[in-house]
Amino acid sequence: MRHVSVSLVLVAVGLTAAFCVVVLLGFGFRGPGIADTEPALSVATWIDVAQGTGARNIVSAIYLNVRLFDTILEVLVFSVAVLGVHFYLTARGRPEPVESIPESSVVRVAADLLLPLILLIGLYVTVYGHLSPGGGFSGGVIAGTGLLLAAIVLGTKTVTARLGRRLLDRLEWITLLGILIVGLVPAALARTPLVDLLPAGSPGRVGSGGSILLYNGLIGLKVFVGSWVIIRHFVDHRGEI
Amino acid sequence: MSWLNGVTVSIVLFGIGLLGLVLRRDLVIKLLALGLVNASTILCLVSLGARSDGAPPLLGISTVQNIVDPLPQAIVLSAIVINFAILALALVFVMLLVERYHTTDSHRIERETAEEEEQEELWS
Image (cartoon, rainbow over all chains, first blue to last red; front, side, top):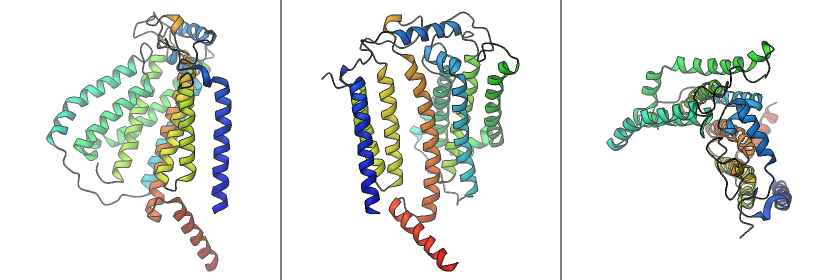
């Protein structure tokens, strides 16, 4: 037992040291602006890509256009994690229900005021993902966190009853199916470019960016529902928040 | 202080996280250390495109010469989502282990599984 952990520590220290040497030699001694002296070759390429898609946010133009299939598989990984949490915690069975602790009136009033705003910000970040910083992943997490706030104040049972448990479980798989279908339709129709179904539109408008808006909306819905499913399962099996 | 940049800070964080992952016995703290390793990787990748006069990679808003490299940011998005997925799933497994062995200490869990195996061999 003892010698195993010692050798593990040695391996860890060795790996870290090797990593440090490689990275320090490559990038380490350059000051805070590491890419200051770099030629902007890569950036110019990505600007061309973004102009081709009609999106203003170059990052979403990369991960929802040229790296689209990678992102779809990433959504698949997220879905598998949600399915894993769902499966293992449902198989564990229901523990004794715990009485929820009533929150103070300050939290209740603040949650009432903030919940619509948080959901609205989540929607805004999702819909404007191709024009400004944001996108489906961050917008979905913002809206899911808003539901967590509601769950703290009202209790998960009330929130689940209001949203409809069955609807949420179905919505999760329907959105995943939607993302896969929308992603694979151009390939099925033999249309090029393979990742873009809609016209680019004029840059700066909400309707621009080709399919990026569609993917952002679907991914936002997926992450919103998925994070809520994870939160609900964790809370259900630890009593109330 | 020319050596103080995102990469060097991320190396320190990576080392702390890796040592915590190996040395600490508490499973929850191991998971926190894993999160620290992940955060250090994200910091390293994003700071590779950093410029001291950097502007966000938005066309039509930032001037083109100052735009930071958008590729690491797009790649880091996968790392963030997958870290979230791993953390949620690993926490479920920790919950199952705690329910069975009533401890988060990895050494005690290993000892008890070894004892269980010995008893199974005795019975068979």
